[in-house]
Length: 385
Image (cartoon, rainbow, N blue to C red):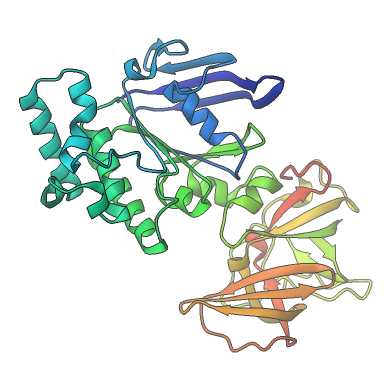
Protein backbone atom coordinates (compact mmCIF):
# COMPACT_ATOMS: atom_id res chain seq x y z
CA UNK A 1 0.00 0.00 0.00
CA UNK A 2 1.06 3.60 -0.53
CA UNK A 3 -0.07 7.10 0.18
CA UNK A 4 -1.48 9.20 -2.66
CA UNK A 5 -0.86 12.95 -2.78
CA UNK A 6 -2.53 15.30 -5.25
CA UNK A 7 -1.26 18.88 -5.45
CA UNK A 8 -2.81 21.82 -7.33
CA UNK A 9 -4.22 19.48 -9.96
CA UNK A 10 -5.85 20.99 -13.05
CA UNK A 11 -7.48 19.33 -16.03
CA UNK A 12 -8.77 20.96 -19.20
CA UNK A 13 -10.28 19.50 -22.34
CA UNK A 14 -9.32 22.13 -24.89
CA UNK A 15 -10.61 25.44 -23.57
CA UNK A 16 -12.97 23.78 -21.06
CA UNK A 17 -11.53 23.47 -17.54
CA UNK A 18 -13.04 20.61 -15.54
CA UNK A 19 -10.66 20.27 -12.54
CA UNK A 20 -9.61 23.47 -10.76
CA UNK A 21 -6.59 23.22 -8.45
CA UNK A 22 -7.47 20.12 -6.41
CA UNK A 23 -5.40 19.13 -3.35
CA UNK A 24 -5.89 15.75 -1.62
CA UNK A 25 -3.85 13.75 0.89
CA UNK A 26 -4.69 10.04 1.09
CA UNK A 27 -2.83 8.11 3.76
CA UNK A 28 -1.52 4.55 3.51
CA UNK A 29 -4.35 2.06 3.91
CA UNK A 30 -7.11 4.68 3.89
CA UNK A 31 -10.47 4.11 2.22
CA UNK A 32 -11.29 7.45 0.60
CA UNK A 33 -14.51 8.14 -1.30
CA UNK A 34 -14.80 10.86 -3.94
CA UNK A 35 -18.45 11.87 -4.01
CA UNK A 36 -20.48 14.50 -5.83
CA UNK A 37 -23.16 14.98 -8.46
CA UNK A 38 -22.73 13.88 -12.06
CA UNK A 39 -20.28 16.14 -13.88
CA UNK A 40 -18.42 17.30 -10.77
CA UNK A 41 -15.10 15.84 -11.97
CA UNK A 42 -14.71 12.88 -9.59
CA UNK A 43 -14.30 10.21 -12.29
CA UNK A 44 -11.93 12.46 -14.27
CA UNK A 45 -9.82 12.89 -11.14
CA UNK A 46 -9.76 9.11 -10.60
CA UNK A 47 -8.74 8.52 -14.22
CA UNK A 48 -5.91 11.03 -13.83
CA UNK A 49 -4.64 9.13 -10.79
CA UNK A 50 -4.89 5.92 -12.83
CA UNK A 51 -3.03 7.48 -15.76
CA UNK A 52 -5.98 7.16 -18.15
CA UNK A 53 -6.21 10.95 -18.47
CA UNK A 54 -3.28 13.35 -18.83
CA UNK A 55 -2.55 16.07 -16.27
CA UNK A 56 -2.88 19.67 -17.45
CA UNK A 57 -1.09 21.09 -14.40
CA UNK A 58 -0.15 19.98 -10.89
CA UNK A 59 1.31 16.73 -9.57
CA UNK A 60 0.17 13.27 -8.54
CA UNK A 61 2.36 11.23 -6.19
CA UNK A 62 1.88 7.54 -5.46
CA UNK A 63 4.20 6.81 -2.60
CA UNK A 64 7.30 8.98 -3.03
CA UNK A 65 7.12 8.97 -6.84
CA UNK A 66 5.58 11.61 -9.11
CA UNK A 67 3.56 9.62 -11.65
CA UNK A 68 2.31 12.36 -13.99
CA UNK A 69 4.13 10.83 -16.96
CA UNK A 70 4.24 7.22 -15.80
CA UNK A 71 2.14 4.79 -17.92
CA UNK A 72 -0.87 3.22 -16.15
CA UNK A 73 0.69 -0.25 -16.22
CA UNK A 74 3.73 1.02 -14.27
CA UNK A 75 1.86 2.91 -11.52
CA UNK A 76 1.23 -0.22 -9.41
CA UNK A 77 -2.50 0.47 -9.23
CA UNK A 78 -5.53 -1.69 -10.07
CA UNK A 79 -8.84 -0.30 -11.27
CA UNK A 80 -12.35 -1.73 -11.03
CA UNK A 81 -14.75 -0.26 -13.59
CA UNK A 82 -18.49 0.33 -13.52
CA UNK A 83 -19.15 -2.06 -16.44
CA UNK A 84 -16.94 -4.94 -15.14
CA UNK A 85 -14.94 -5.06 -18.45
CA UNK A 86 -14.68 -8.85 -18.44
CA UNK A 87 -13.68 -10.90 -21.49
CA UNK A 88 -16.82 -12.88 -22.40
CA UNK A 89 -14.86 -15.70 -24.08
CA UNK A 90 -12.61 -16.32 -21.06
CA UNK A 91 -13.46 -18.20 -17.89
CA UNK A 92 -13.49 -16.55 -14.48
CA UNK A 93 -10.01 -17.92 -13.76
CA UNK A 94 -8.68 -16.71 -17.11
CA UNK A 95 -10.18 -13.25 -16.62
CA UNK A 96 -8.58 -12.93 -13.19
CA UNK A 97 -5.21 -14.21 -14.44
CA UNK A 98 -5.06 -12.18 -17.64
CA UNK A 99 -3.11 -9.15 -16.37
CA UNK A 100 -0.53 -11.34 -14.65
CA UNK A 101 0.00 -13.41 -17.80
CA UNK A 102 0.58 -10.23 -19.79
CA UNK A 103 3.32 -9.39 -17.33
CA UNK A 104 4.75 -12.90 -17.85
CA UNK A 105 4.41 -13.86 -14.19
CA UNK A 106 5.30 -17.50 -13.51
CA UNK A 107 2.28 -19.77 -14.04
CA UNK A 108 2.51 -21.31 -10.57
CA UNK A 109 2.38 -17.84 -8.99
CA UNK A 110 -0.57 -16.92 -11.21
CA UNK A 111 -2.49 -20.02 -10.17
CA UNK A 112 -1.78 -19.42 -6.49
CA UNK A 113 -2.88 -15.76 -6.62
CA UNK A 114 -6.05 -16.59 -8.53
CA UNK A 115 -6.99 -19.30 -6.04
CA UNK A 116 -6.29 -16.99 -3.08
CA UNK A 117 -8.38 -14.18 -4.57
CA UNK A 118 -11.20 -16.58 -5.45
CA UNK A 119 -11.28 -17.85 -1.88
CA UNK A 120 -11.42 -14.31 -0.48
CA UNK A 121 -14.31 -13.39 -2.79
CA UNK A 122 -16.22 -16.68 -2.65
CA UNK A 123 -15.57 -17.40 -6.33
CA UNK A 124 -13.88 -20.79 -6.06
CA UNK A 125 -16.95 -22.74 -7.33
CA UNK A 126 -17.19 -20.44 -10.36
CA UNK A 127 -13.61 -20.43 -11.66
CA UNK A 128 -14.50 -22.51 -14.73
CA UNK A 129 -17.65 -20.55 -15.63
CA UNK A 130 -17.93 -17.78 -18.21
CA UNK A 131 -19.21 -14.25 -17.40
CA UNK A 132 -22.56 -14.95 -19.10
CA UNK A 133 -23.15 -17.71 -16.53
CA UNK A 134 -22.74 -15.34 -13.57
CA UNK A 135 -25.02 -12.87 -11.78
CA UNK A 136 -24.22 -9.17 -11.69
CA UNK A 137 -22.77 -9.43 -8.19
CA UNK A 138 -20.60 -12.37 -9.18
CA UNK A 139 -19.28 -10.50 -12.22
CA UNK A 140 -18.38 -7.56 -10.00
CA UNK A 141 -16.49 -9.94 -7.71
CA UNK A 142 -14.55 -11.26 -10.71
CA UNK A 143 -13.58 -7.68 -11.62
CA UNK A 144 -12.44 -7.17 -8.03
CA UNK A 145 -10.54 -10.47 -8.12
CA UNK A 146 -8.70 -9.37 -11.25
CA UNK A 147 -7.56 -6.31 -9.29
CA UNK A 148 -6.63 -8.27 -6.14
CA UNK A 149 -4.34 -10.75 -7.92
CA UNK A 150 -2.12 -7.89 -9.03
CA UNK A 151 -1.39 -7.05 -5.37
CA UNK A 152 -1.33 -3.30 -6.15
CA UNK A 153 -0.36 -0.40 -3.91
CA UNK A 154 -3.68 1.35 -4.63
CA UNK A 155 -7.18 0.14 -5.57
CA UNK A 156 -9.30 2.48 -7.71
CA UNK A 157 -13.06 1.90 -7.93
CA UNK A 158 -15.08 3.87 -10.52
CA UNK A 159 -18.76 3.63 -9.48
CA UNK A 160 -18.56 -0.18 -9.34
CA UNK A 161 -22.04 -0.66 -7.85
CA UNK A 162 -24.08 1.47 -10.23
CA UNK A 163 -25.24 -1.47 -12.37
CA UNK A 164 -26.45 -3.58 -9.44
CA UNK A 165 -29.94 -3.77 -7.94
CA UNK A 166 -30.61 -2.34 -4.48
CA UNK A 167 -30.10 -5.58 -2.55
CA UNK A 168 -26.85 -6.40 -4.34
CA UNK A 169 -25.56 -2.86 -3.84
CA UNK A 170 -25.93 -3.22 -0.07
CA UNK A 171 -24.29 -6.67 -0.14
CA UNK A 172 -21.38 -5.49 -2.30
CA UNK A 173 -20.85 -2.41 -0.11
CA UNK A 174 -20.29 -4.74 2.82
CA UNK A 175 -18.03 -7.06 0.84
CA UNK A 176 -15.84 -4.24 -0.48
CA UNK A 177 -15.47 -2.76 3.01
CA UNK A 178 -14.61 -6.19 4.47
CA UNK A 179 -12.11 -6.71 1.66
CA UNK A 180 -10.42 -3.43 2.52
CA UNK A 181 -10.30 -4.31 6.22
CA UNK A 182 -8.63 -7.60 5.30
CA UNK A 183 -6.12 -6.37 2.71
CA UNK A 184 -5.48 -2.85 4.13
CA UNK A 185 -4.74 -1.58 0.62
CA UNK A 186 -5.10 2.15 -0.03
CA UNK A 187 -8.46 2.53 -1.78
CA UNK A 188 -10.04 5.40 -3.74
CA UNK A 189 -13.71 4.87 -4.51
CA UNK A 190 -15.84 7.10 -6.75
CA UNK A 191 -19.61 7.33 -6.37
CA UNK A 192 -22.47 9.79 -6.78
CA UNK A 193 -24.38 8.00 -3.99
CA UNK A 194 -23.81 9.75 -0.67
CA UNK A 195 -25.18 6.72 1.24
CA UNK A 196 -22.36 4.63 -0.23
CA UNK A 197 -19.91 7.35 0.76
CA UNK A 198 -21.21 7.58 4.34
CA UNK A 199 -21.27 3.82 4.94
CA UNK A 200 -17.93 2.89 3.35
CA UNK A 201 -15.43 5.73 3.74
CA UNK A 202 -12.74 6.45 6.27
CA UNK A 203 -12.61 9.88 4.66
CA UNK A 204 -14.95 11.58 2.18
CA UNK A 205 -13.96 14.16 -0.45
CA UNK A 206 -17.04 16.13 -1.57
CA UNK A 207 -16.63 17.61 -5.06
CA UNK A 208 -18.69 20.16 -6.98
CA UNK A 209 -17.93 21.75 -10.36
CA UNK A 210 -14.36 20.46 -10.39
CA UNK A 211 -13.50 21.76 -6.92
CA UNK A 212 -13.33 20.22 -3.47
CA UNK A 213 -16.03 21.55 -1.15
CA UNK A 214 -15.01 19.67 2.01
CA UNK A 215 -12.86 16.77 3.20
CA UNK A 216 -13.54 14.88 6.40
CA UNK A 217 -14.85 11.75 8.07
CA UNK A 218 -18.48 10.84 7.36
CA UNK A 219 -19.65 12.16 10.73
CA UNK A 220 -17.65 15.39 10.42
CA UNK A 221 -19.44 16.13 7.16
CA UNK A 222 -22.80 15.13 8.62
CA UNK A 223 -22.44 17.13 11.85
CA UNK A 224 -20.54 20.18 10.59
CA UNK A 225 -21.05 20.74 6.86
CA UNK A 226 -18.85 23.56 5.61
CA UNK A 227 -21.47 25.12 3.36
CA UNK A 228 -24.99 24.75 1.96
CA UNK A 229 -23.87 22.42 -0.84
CA UNK A 230 -22.32 19.88 1.54
CA UNK A 231 -25.25 20.23 3.95
CA UNK A 232 -27.76 19.45 1.22
CA UNK A 233 -25.68 16.70 -0.43
CA UNK A 234 -24.65 14.69 2.64
CA UNK A 235 -27.55 13.08 4.46
CA UNK A 236 -30.61 11.26 3.17
CA UNK A 237 -33.13 12.83 3.00
CA UNK A 238 -31.32 16.13 2.49
CA UNK A 239 -31.10 18.80 5.17
CA UNK A 240 -34.01 21.26 5.33
CA UNK A 241 -32.89 24.83 4.56
CA UNK A 242 -35.26 27.60 5.66
CA UNK A 243 -34.76 31.26 4.77
CA UNK A 244 -34.97 33.45 7.87
CA UNK A 245 -33.67 36.39 9.88
CA UNK A 246 -31.25 36.05 12.77
CA UNK A 247 -32.39 37.50 16.09
CA UNK A 248 -30.03 38.06 19.00
CA UNK A 249 -31.15 38.75 22.52
CA UNK A 250 -30.96 36.67 25.66
CA UNK A 251 -30.51 33.80 23.22
CA UNK A 252 -30.14 33.32 19.48
CA UNK A 253 -32.99 32.28 17.22
CA UNK A 254 -34.10 32.62 13.62
CA UNK A 255 -37.39 34.21 12.57
CA UNK A 256 -39.05 32.45 9.65
CA UNK A 257 -42.66 32.36 8.48
CA UNK A 258 -43.80 34.22 11.59
CA UNK A 259 -42.20 31.80 14.06
CA UNK A 260 -38.95 31.56 15.94
CA UNK A 261 -36.66 28.62 15.28
CA UNK A 262 -34.26 27.75 18.12
CA UNK A 263 -30.48 27.75 17.83
CA UNK A 264 -28.26 26.40 20.58
CA UNK A 265 -25.71 23.80 21.64
CA UNK A 266 -27.21 22.59 24.91
CA UNK A 267 -28.21 19.09 25.87
CA UNK A 268 -31.77 18.05 25.18
CA UNK A 269 -33.79 17.63 28.34
CA UNK A 270 -36.08 14.68 28.79
CA UNK A 271 -38.93 14.91 26.35
CA UNK A 272 -39.61 18.45 25.20
CA UNK A 273 -40.54 19.91 28.55
CA UNK A 274 -38.01 22.70 29.03
CA UNK A 275 -38.70 26.13 27.59
CA UNK A 276 -35.83 28.35 26.53
CA UNK A 277 -37.40 31.74 27.00
CA UNK A 278 -37.67 32.34 23.27
CA UNK A 279 -41.27 33.55 23.48
CA UNK A 280 -41.70 36.32 20.96
CA UNK A 281 -42.14 39.88 22.16
CA UNK A 282 -43.81 40.85 18.89
CA UNK A 283 -46.42 38.11 18.76
CA UNK A 284 -44.05 35.46 17.40
CA UNK A 285 -44.77 32.20 19.14
CA UNK A 286 -42.38 29.33 19.65
CA UNK A 287 -40.40 27.79 22.44
CA UNK A 288 -37.27 25.84 21.67
CA UNK A 289 -37.52 22.98 24.17
CA UNK A 290 -33.76 23.25 24.64
CA UNK A 291 -31.38 25.49 26.53
CA UNK A 292 -28.88 27.31 24.36
CA UNK A 293 -25.39 26.96 25.80
CA UNK A 294 -23.38 27.20 22.64
CA UNK A 295 -22.00 30.70 23.08
CA UNK A 296 -23.59 31.80 19.82
CA UNK A 297 -24.70 35.00 21.55
CA UNK A 298 -21.10 36.20 21.56
CA UNK A 299 -19.95 34.75 18.27
CA UNK A 300 -18.59 37.43 15.93
CA UNK A 301 -20.14 37.72 12.51
CA UNK A 302 -23.66 36.96 13.73
CA UNK A 303 -25.60 40.19 13.54
CA UNK A 304 -29.15 40.86 14.60
CA UNK A 305 -31.32 41.14 11.49
CA UNK A 306 -28.86 39.19 9.34
CA UNK A 307 -30.40 37.10 6.55
CA UNK A 308 -29.53 33.43 7.10
CA UNK A 309 -30.44 29.92 6.06
CA UNK A 310 -31.57 27.78 8.98
CA UNK A 311 -30.58 24.16 8.48
CA UNK A 312 -32.19 21.23 10.26
CA UNK A 313 -32.00 17.59 9.24
CA UNK A 314 -35.29 15.69 8.81
CA UNK A 315 -34.43 13.31 11.64
CA UNK A 316 -33.89 16.25 14.04
CA UNK A 317 -37.49 17.47 13.92
CA UNK A 318 -39.85 16.35 16.69
CA UNK A 319 -43.62 16.53 17.10
CA UNK A 320 -44.49 19.01 19.86
CA UNK A 321 -47.48 21.20 20.73
CA UNK A 322 -45.23 24.27 21.06
CA UNK A 323 -43.59 23.76 17.65
CA UNK A 324 -44.33 25.62 14.42
CA UNK A 325 -47.29 24.47 12.31
CA UNK A 326 -46.79 22.66 8.99
CA UNK A 327 -49.31 21.09 6.63
CA UNK A 328 -48.83 17.45 5.59
CA UNK A 329 -48.40 17.03 1.82
CA UNK A 330 -47.09 13.46 1.36
CA UNK A 331 -46.56 10.54 3.74
CA UNK A 332 -44.00 7.84 2.84
CA UNK A 333 -43.96 4.92 5.31
CA UNK A 334 -40.83 2.76 5.07
CA UNK A 335 -41.65 0.33 7.87
CA UNK A 336 -39.10 1.36 10.45
CA UNK A 337 -39.64 5.09 9.80
CA UNK A 338 -42.24 7.51 8.53
CA UNK A 339 -41.01 10.14 6.07
CA UNK A 340 -43.32 13.15 5.77
CA UNK A 341 -43.17 16.03 3.27
CA UNK A 342 -44.78 19.16 4.68
CA UNK A 343 -45.42 22.81 3.74
CA UNK A 344 -44.77 25.74 6.03
CA UNK A 345 -45.32 29.08 4.32
CA UNK A 346 -43.29 28.96 1.12
CA UNK A 347 -40.95 26.28 2.46
CA UNK A 348 -41.09 22.55 1.80
CA UNK A 349 -39.94 20.63 4.85
CA UNK A 350 -39.12 16.94 5.17
CA UNK A 351 -39.35 15.20 8.54
CA UNK A 352 -38.42 11.62 9.45
CA UNK A 353 -39.98 10.00 12.52
CA UNK A 354 -38.74 6.68 13.96
CA UNK A 355 -42.24 5.27 14.41
CA UNK A 356 -45.36 4.84 12.28
CA UNK A 357 -47.64 7.91 12.18
CA UNK A 358 -50.98 7.83 10.39
CA UNK A 359 -50.86 11.39 9.04
CA UNK A 360 -53.40 12.47 6.44
CA UNK A 361 -52.61 14.87 3.56
CA UNK A 362 -53.79 18.35 4.51
CA UNK A 363 -53.48 17.68 8.24
CA UNK A 364 -51.58 20.25 10.32
CA UNK A 365 -48.85 19.07 12.68
CA UNK A 366 -46.45 21.02 14.90
CA UNK A 367 -42.70 20.53 14.50
CA UNK A 368 -40.00 21.47 16.98
CA UNK A 369 -36.36 21.53 15.77
CA UNK A 370 -33.75 20.22 18.19
CA UNK A 371 -31.86 23.41 18.95
CA UNK A 372 -28.52 21.66 19.49
CA UNK A 373 -28.71 20.12 16.00
CA UNK A 374 -29.52 23.34 14.10
CA UNK A 375 -27.11 24.82 11.51
CA UNK A 376 -26.78 28.41 10.29
CA UNK A 377 -25.50 29.39 6.85
CA UNK A 378 -24.95 32.75 5.19
CA UNK A 379 -27.85 33.23 2.78
CA UNK A 380 -25.59 34.94 0.20
CA UNK A 381 -22.35 32.90 0.22
CA UNK A 382 -23.78 29.66 1.57
CA UNK A 383 -20.88 29.38 4.05
CA UNK A 384 -21.43 27.97 7.54
CA UNK A 385 -21.77 30.60 10.26
